Amino acid sequence: MNEYPTLNFLLEHARALAWATAAAPVLGALLAVAAGANALWLIAGAALGIVGFGLVRSYVELIRLVTDMLLPK
Image (cartoon, rainbow, N blue to C red; front, side, top):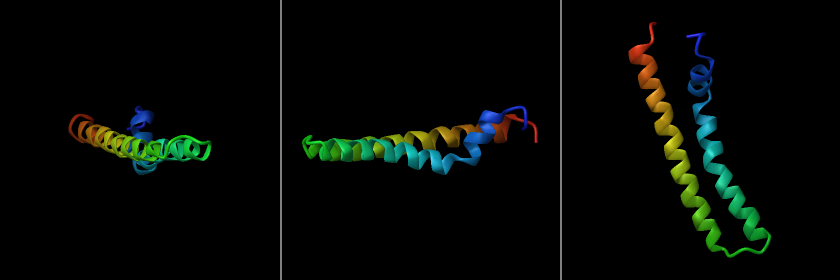
């Protein structure tokens, strides 16, 4: 599968990418609250982090399914 470096990268680093996607809005909300924003931004940041985590994980599962079924081994 060397001819598909992006797919290889996503499959190898899926867990780290999902956690980074989940952490980014939470950290952004923490920084906003530290700068004086309303504490409700933490709830929004956590919700967005959960949704982002799920989206990345489902995308990686779809890539894994496609590579397992369609690409030659």
